[in-house]
Image (cartoon, rainbow, N blue to C red; front, side, top):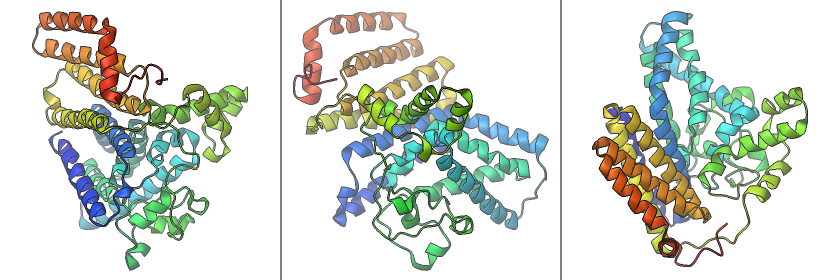
Length: 407
């Protein structure tokens, strides 16, 4: 887990570098506060939950290789080249099917929700998408590539794709005919009609050329979904599409039609369903204006969560099952809270109380002090019973009395 922990600070080094270069070039508009917080929050959740399942997939690769591999491919420099090409080929079809089948698109859509295109967008990966992707990777040890080689290539593959999520790098001349460049991948993230369902490759461009899905950048890309989301909610962004599928299946009336919806194409799903769900579950309100104090408060939560994730990853093997559960819950609640704060939800105060309770429970368990938890519980009960404290909290966060404004 040690090397995985240092992916987190490395990510932010390049993110800050991108932001600095954008500012120097007068293009700081490539970033927005709300989108960056949302993108990073989703990335934190994926890194956190993947800690719990990564080892299982590594073990699965070895199990498949030892028991079911069709070949035992020897280690040679040419083997690495073939493995890289094979990995990119598998990625192409994993990625393409992720856009063409509703069940997979529900996991992948989160990556395309951002209406910006910068390094923060590369973090928009859900754990469900990671699971589906790893299942496709199982084909590599099945063919006969040694799992250690597979894991090494996947690191290279994942690192390369990170650097294609930027607008600061323009077209790269003759390299455009060999590699997936930021220009090509920007097309993939665009909602322009001519750009839809194009450029599925991750490293090499020739799979798209071979299967007829290549599209060079011509007009300026408009990033995001064809039907943009109307929410910064952490939960809504993760689960809205599956809720739409569930509603479509409910309306279909038969099991067979429901199966066709689940494995059908996203463009065939009734787009009116999202508007119905948004009207029902996302009450309308004016666009919030965020004060400097609010941004500082939200950034403190995000930075502390990142620091917590780094330390949790670094020392993961030293935590007990109970401690792991509590840490995961605290971090997930914080991420949900970040989205709810931007959405101005009325239940954020209660969420803060629950989070404080979980933190006290963690301290009590790790220090083996039931007395600390009892005292913390009494204090929290007293605080929540005082209405003026709740009013002060909302005044501090939003700089106004929110009772009449929050949904």
